[in-house]
Amino acid sequence: MSGLGKLDRPGTPRDPGPREGAGGEDAGRAGRDGRQSPPASAVRRSAADPVKGLLHRHRELCERAVDPLEIAAGLEAHGVTDRTAARFRHRDVFSLAEEMYARVPRDGDAPAPPEDGPTPRPGGPRAAGSVLLALLPGVLCAAA
Image 1 (cartoon, one colour):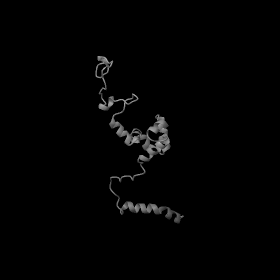
Image 2 (cartoon, rainbow, N blue to C red):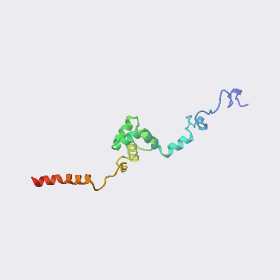
Image 3 (cartoon, helix red, strand yellow):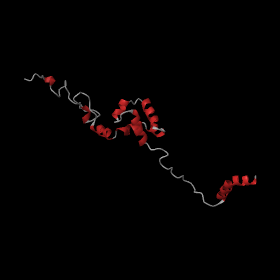
Image 4 (cartoon, helix red, strand yellow):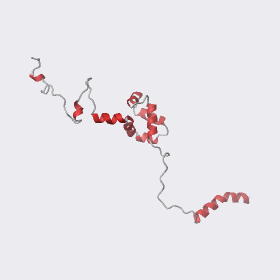
């Protein structure tokens, strides 16, 4: 005999085997080192663009930053270290901040949308008044 008793066989109450939980089929699988592996869908999503999720979490910081150093300071204040930056495929927090700064569109990059309102006519009383107002300093200098 193999030495395994009735209670030691896989599938018995002593060794229930992999359990399915909220994570689906992949949630119960463990690697060779005993750690749980993340679901395959999470691996695919994070492997494509690891910075995108971080950018989404710190969007407000990145949008109001005036340079990459401000983003780096904000990331470090939130606990992002060089070791964390290495998980996002960057050598340090500063290079990660530079990429995040480059990815966020700035207010000055795109032209402002035109205002919805009546467009001023080229002629009329306002045009004549603005011309007289522009000539006023010259007229005053000539009179003096």
